[in-house]
Length: 270
Image (cartoon, rainbow, N blue to C red):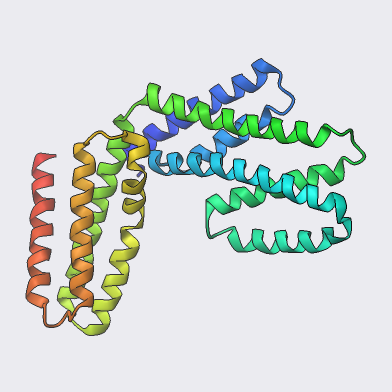
């Protein structure tokens, strides 16, 4: 069953995409399709925090990519024989970055898009490539701006608070389960396995906390404080499991008790 935050997020995404479509149709802008593409790419993850992170990376990635594309095109203007070499390098980098970093992927996508446009629309007037670069940049920036404004001033913090609260609770439940598994089998091998599981289980929560300033600003949000407490418990568990786990079994059991009591209190309050 989908969480309440996910269902609310689906409604927000629908509204954002509708507004982007209306901007595209209403302005009759030839390259306005980049507004819809940018908004769709940014809001794709069902998380306000991840969307804010993608919006930041898309903005700066597009800006850097346009500068790099201009530099490459200027170089190829005087060295056209090097085009195959540059194409192979870009293709290799694209395949490598596809699953590594969204920020660098956007830079490469922007560079490749500009290069393809330049060499599929030749011959062209002197201003054609520049016009395309400007239009694409404006489309991406407008799309990101629509997302930031609507999310910040219309939807507010309510869904973001709910998301971080649900993710914190889910991470705490996973910690309880992992420590329970180690309690039943307190070996050195299981300790390292459990430590790796905890590290994996906290990846989303770390992303939420890392992007929190973009979402909440400098506000001291109670739900964010709770998320940091949960992350601290997970980090403490990881250190105990890696640092002589069989010797520190009593402390791990004590931590398991703290997590269990914390979850029981949450159930009572709920």
